Structure formats: C-alpha cells, structure tokens
Length: 181
Image (cartoon, rainbow, N blue to C red):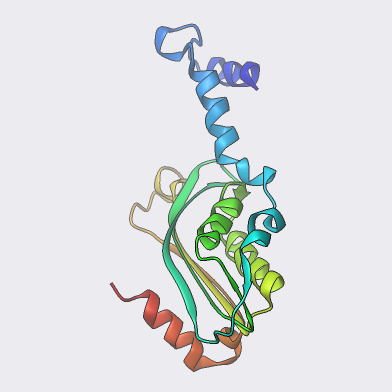
C-alpha cells in the first residue's frame, strides 16, 4: 500500500520525498490498518467468552460509547456516541464486550445505518434477548468538511428489535435513560 499512498501524494501535487512527507506513506498505512481492524475480528470470538446465564430480566444499558469509523463513500471519519440496551432472556453479555462489539463494526468502512443494525442484530443473535435497542449519534466529516459543509449537524440512527420495537413504554424508557446527563 506504500506505493499507492506515494502515488496519491504525487497526484495531488505533493512531493513524497519532501522532509515532512517521507514517512507519511508508512503512517497512513498503519492508520488505515488500525481503522479497518474490525475486518480481522468476528463477533463469535469477541463475545463467546463473555456470555453468561443469569436470571435478570430488567433493561441493561451501556450508553455514551465513543465511536469512530470511516465513511465508505469518502473514506472520511465519522464519530460520535453509541447507546446500546437489551432486556435479557436468561443470558447476558459481559458489559465490556458491548463497547468492543461497537468498535469491531466501527473499524470497518461503514455507513452509520449499517453499523447501528449490525450491533443490534449481533446481540439479538448471540443471546436472544427480549429486545435490543441501539442508537448512534454521529458527526460526519464528509458533511462537515466538504459537500453541504454543515458543521453542527448530527446524524441519529436507531435499531429497535423485540420489546423495544413492539412496546412504546419500553422504547420510551430507553430513550429517556440515554438522554439523562
């Protein structure tokens, strides 16, 4: 990938042998490999050691999970917060695994809508809870730096499954809890 990055530098009018750019291809290569490391992970390996049988049937929420991803359309970052909730049905996920799951999907080329669904569907598949809810709030540099250039816009996506989709009170409880500061 180093030759390709050098070629991009030349095509935009830069000199890749210039002092400040000599190591840029290596740094960009390293950064892109980190930012796309989610492709080299899978949810089974990530979650299987942290699934537990527990008789708990109230809402579990992990909110304000910092999230950073790359837009698949422009390869520009989008970043924000992810809020995840589920209602157990005899099984729970270790709490630290939920942010790791968000990171796994965020560290792929993404659109926010797919990222939101992937987190919800994976939790639903792995523990068959009574319901899952995921809300992502993000700012997209492709909208801030270029295109419409709206610096204060925030995109909000949600995926509601089971009780969160079917029961307005359950959905409202989740939304109220994630909006508390």
